[in-house]
Amino acid sequence: MGDLMLNYHACGAECREDWWRMLANENGLPFGAVQRLAEKLGAKQDFGKLVHLCESGGRAVQ
Image (cartoon, rainbow, N blue to C red):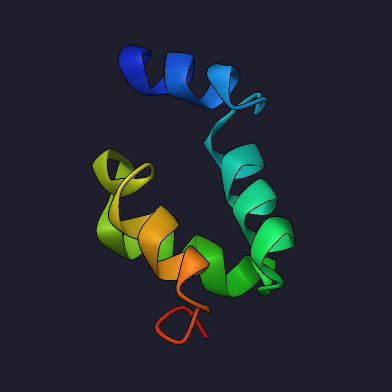
């Protein structure tokens, strides 16, 4: 998780949950939906598939 923490900090987030909030806000998505998807995908996808799904309009997120 150490490498992921560096990624969160590099993006301006303090922790994983902050990253989810940022993704939700930037893409106009409900935080709860992003959180559920992130938990389902796992931490290793926080900067991959999760970002892609959120930026794709969030159809899979909502």
